[in-house]
Image (cartoon, rainbow, N blue to C red; front, side, top):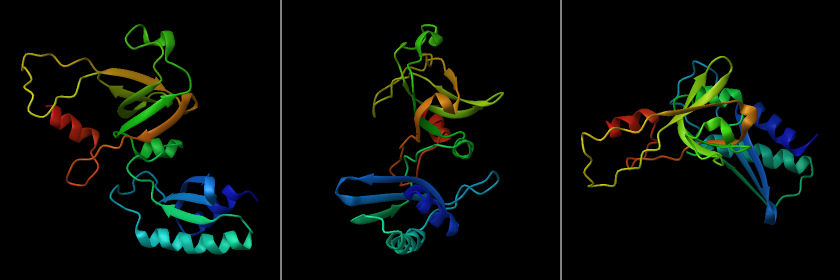
Length: 194
């Protein structure tokens, strides 16, 4: 059995979800876990330090039995810039601000509205029918603190780009935090602009 499968089975056996496994130089084995989610689950459930400790203890035992060579094990939550990989991840974070990177530049499909070589986008994740996703963004320049903005200035038009998961190189939640310590949502950003 592969290391990835061993770790995934162990984490799932503890009632949690494996998000990512990473091995780096110096023998570090980094495991990122989260609470499993299905449509209808409350969004305010959070992973605890006790969950990470429980997974660490169990993985130390399993990795020793499997004779996996590593120097240090690090188990953590996905953080505010969580990686989105599966369809369920996209459903879970629909309406949030995400950063996506396409495998290939947008090219002629942009019809001159966006640079043809552009591959990276930040915007609000939405469901696109029939079976895909879209990102909605504006290329509005952020207003600096204390800067006056004319009430007559028209906001730039919203742009929409549809995509499928096969077209993505990577997708992450955008790490947007206010200074009160909670993660900002797309609704918070639109309220601030209005």
